[in-house]
Image 1 (cartoon, rainbow, N blue to C red):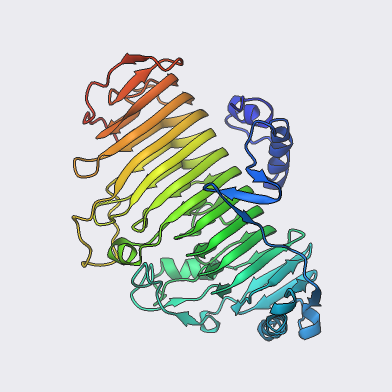
Image 2 (image 1 turned 120 degrees about the vertical axis):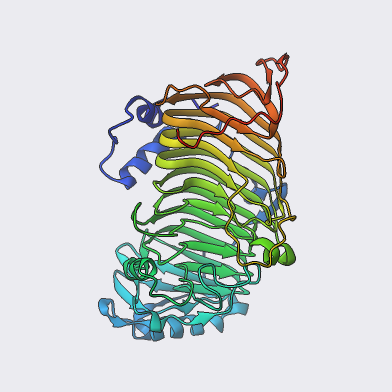
Length: 486
């Protein structure tokens, strides 16, 4: 158990005033406090191997036998010169070194304007301190790509979609790292055109890697993406560590932080994320397209994060989850100044499943709704979906939950079509701002509440004491008590 001491305790005792002048200072102090609990928090490493889902996989090496500098290929870091060809020449040189261990392309301090470019296998993209890769804002420089197969068409418009600024597909052994250099999507123009309905295609992510394996992204800052920030799609063995992701918390539409999409064996840890949509959203395809594609997201660990989302949620699953999501661990998370903390969202027509999900050691500070499970999130890619394709939601646990300044701690909204089964709450103490009854809201959910649960759970749950002894049976699994006016 993680007690509310140190920085986490400060957040709970001081709900209105942030203790630090910047997110970096906040993050540093948070993890100084966390070091004291190092033996409590699970690190899941065995002899240099990363353990996900019970299957050890070795993290790829970050050392390359050959190092190039972007300036060797004509790069000019003045913020004005377009460096697309310099990046392309550097990547091309590394692509010839695959059988020799690959190579590193170093980006020195400066402002390096570029259009989108592709990565190659066995490559490290290294950003020095004060190095900034700047995305060109004119969409004519952004190529169009086919829609992802599990989405059917672009997420915002039928037809093709814009590529990402940094793109890769069918790759192995790729590292994006540095001394906290920055990749800046300069998304302001995109956000404005999106709101004014001036775009004919779906906006592109900042970094997108498809159908690839052995990916490491660490020690960098990603900011102001046109759309989703980091989007690994149908990838295996992905590590995201020590990454800062930033976008304005308002008026930066769909700037999700990290969106694992049909990914397997993925670790996200030690990150700070403050964006204009979900900080993290686990996905696996959209309605009939995701069902047909059939690639789940599974074996994912998310831990040791500070996240903020004023308009959406800290960590979400869905709503595009038609390929299934399973075996996910979310632990040691601080969510602050957010609309929602943890959310699972789906709808009739999605199909798929969300199961074997564990949340533990969570802290909510000034969050409107702490935990949300919603089964009527009705966004669909068209009229061709099957409304009888019903998702399965079960085996979801929330353990050691703390909070202060929370308006509604829990809102679990199942339905007669989509009941939610085997939900567990254990050891929950959340300070609330709204004294109305029924703020622990439930509908069509079955499960158990173990030990101290405050505020008191709804009558849908069997109650057990800390010794595991049954204290009270649920009144009814179909009791409905949802109030969106709170």
